Length: 267
Image (cartoon, rainbow, N blue to C red; front, side):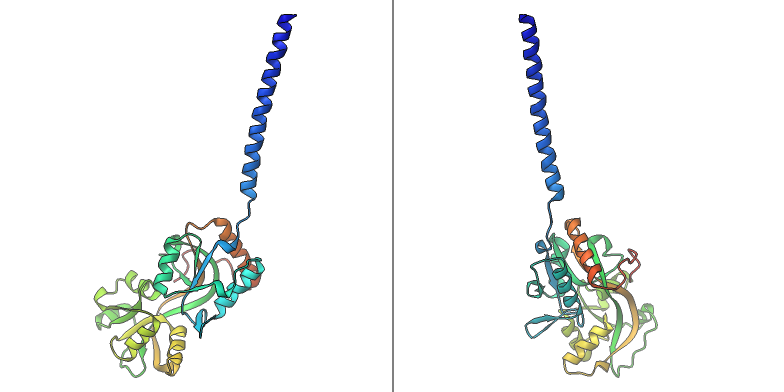
């Protein structure tokens, strides 16, 4: 009888041990499920833009433009508390560096190119953009290719880290002929005051900038197309993929633009 009691006690101890392990396992499983089901909010994203009209720009102290309105609609659809007033407005170079190095940072409107492809997550496309070499009206300049421009020794104004600057560098344009400008208005000033021969920038945006500065749009003349690319929302590469998916879903809901552009097909 004593032997039977010992066996019973051992069985009970084993049962309690197994039940204890089961409780721990269930607790761990519940925690894992909770972690998997935990929601991520677009409110954790920081949105940065710059002056790139008509997509995004300042009108007085208010952000305007089609991309700003698009983002506002996306955030509203997603139920985010963020709005237009939460978008930060920085010079392009600063915004680009922040988006490149700081998780959960979104920069728009950003040209998607093969060289930038792996540096960001991409949501869009927002619109198609044409980057060209521009001359000032009345300048006796003809350009049929980049080699032609190089042979003529033509200097080009660019904005650092902008698609125009990257396109020229990737094409092997001589560094001595590339002249960095602080921003697009400075580049326009350099071109119109003959400090450079050309300006590498979006033709539509350049003409808008010229008109805002009091000149006719035709004061800048497109000579040669550097790239035809799509503009996107660019998210830091370390941003949670669930946030990227949420933003893309919101984009798809509020726009009728095509949503599947093959990676690397731009520019």
